[in-house]
Length: 191
Image (cartoon, rainbow, N blue to C red; front, top):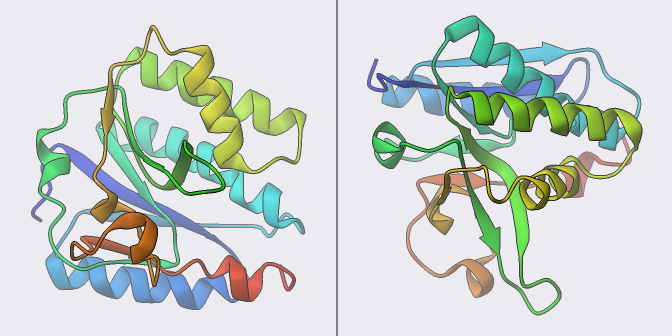
């Protein structure tokens, strides 16, 4: 296994098309020989509520593996070793997308949580907010980041770690380390 001080995690709603997406992710993780765990969970019958399971999975992984956690969505693939993750020393890392319609959108498809008290506090707050609404998990996480801004040791991930397929206009032309295929565009109504 290449990654020493973190684990890559993901999750998918069972008996949905995301199971097949997760298989592709797993193939890419095996090809590079990365340490990972992909968690299946019961379909919540709501796309937003399914996405909100991410926070619970990350919390469980922190507890289960007692190490730093990098989440990548089940509809992503790892193209090459994400070396940067090995050297991170922070509570939280993510990428903010800047577009003409939103100049500061937290992308939760690829996020890193250090195994720290502050990161655990963030996740607990994120779960609490998720439980109070059916809003997109990434918006709830962005709210947590804003609330805890002074407490969090933050690192800005390069776009290559959350590169959305066919989105070079907003994320540049550097080759992706992790490609996100945004299966929600195809499956959101089915799930």
